[in-house]
Image (cartoon, rainbow, N blue to C red; front, side, top):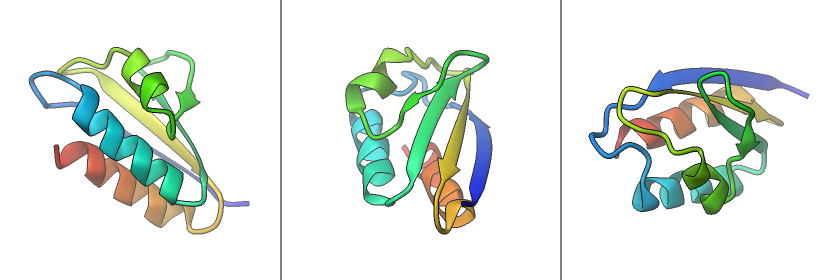
Length: 87
């Protein structure tokens, strides 16, 4: 099974709040892959759970890392990072 990992710094002044968390979680769930997201060196959480993503408390300037396992993991990881950066 393919695995891909991506990191990015969150630039949104309010971090990952309700709307971007919902968009990201929905995209992660629709990907058909197993996706986790972690803040800094923290423990990863399931990315398809809006509450888990919001529970990370990601603020502007924080680094997040997503890990995707499954078919087409590289493309899914790129798409999910773009989802976070588009907000």
